[in-house]
Length: 242
Image 1 (cartoon, helix red, strand yellow):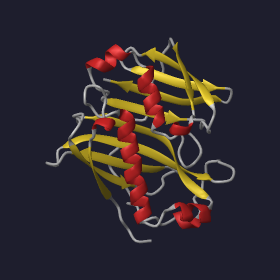
Image 2: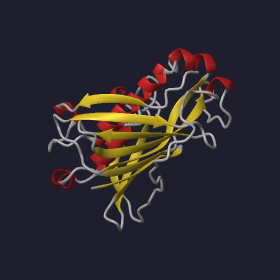
Image 3: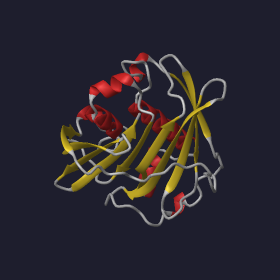
């Protein structure tokens, strides 16, 4: 397969991409990052037909982002996305966000695994077609994926994999967990400042129509911990802060 070790996407932030203060929404950042990754893969021939033929698809297992400078409504950003080949069955993809002058505004680190389309189980060994994807052998940058858990939790409602929250795979899109975590926070905090960093661990998928109970707790650092659970166990965990 032809090598294309990085891909650049450009997006001008519209009002619909931003919060009431004009800062980019965390969920929008993840959707833009995911779209850039999808376009990169499609450029390499990794489209729906490829995944169906090989009965495997990429699924995000963890992600983290950090802003040096949070972009605002009307600003044009460039997303430079660079994946590396699998290490211990996990594919790392780094997306650097820059402004029009090339200044680095932030970084997104996402970790992907291959899942069997029929059993939905993680594949420890990639099918032959995934052995040479045109990704880089190694990408240096990375963020910590360590999850800090709060000792005390309070109820923060119920999250549902509704029609608008699901994607082509029939489950809640990975970016929607960022929306859920932000919505769980006290609004007075969100009016003061933008979210500058977030880490998400995805555990059990929420298929269309499924629900989970959301809980929230403050950490000693001043950051927040949000988690969702149902009869299948923990669905997701999030750390986020300002």
